[in-house]
Length: 310
Image (cartoon, rainbow, N blue to C red):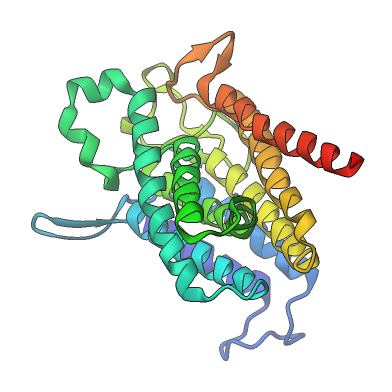
């Protein structure tokens, strides 16, 4: 990591904010919209463009703690806290949500790993021990959604709670968790996009570049695009969860918004991704999986139409 570049970026950021030695702003105690834009500009255009992260947070002998694991932990905690908040609007105790979280974490991790193994079968066939090295990355979100849904169904059945109600309760937290979790890809320098000359493109170490892109230094930060899109989606879902908290009939639309929105986000981003994945009918496999996510949307819309006619 280039700490001199990082320090220079912080110094420029302080100048941009107009901070004096005391830490107070010279003209105003509150951040203006212009200052907020400057913060985002400095971070996206300077820090990301010049800083190559390390994947290792802490290491002592054989014990290694990676940023990927820390980011994943923060994503899970954020998703649980948001789900607890939404559950309180429906008089569901937080203990029930914590129990549900255990189901979802186990189901999601297993599903995400199995899905990743399917996508990279030839690699794991030659490196079977790598199957268990989840701390190094390799968790596919579509598989996580499938595994999480199976876990959600089992929890719903065991606790006699509507599957649709539980789904509407957890998807805002899921979107927030995805927004945070994508930063793990940045630390691992993985799942980036095509080469780019944009000011916010990110540098990728030669060892992490595909062989046919070794001569390029900067690439699209697709992790950032998806993170920001999921953050907006999480805010939108949270708003509708609050607005429709007393209307059980509208809960299905929260699930519909999540499935259709994330399917669109992921489908579009795959056009600029360069990681290896199976291709069918000219589409990358995650695009096909995203299209399949629309099937439950149509089912819910058809059921809603049928109920409306009665």
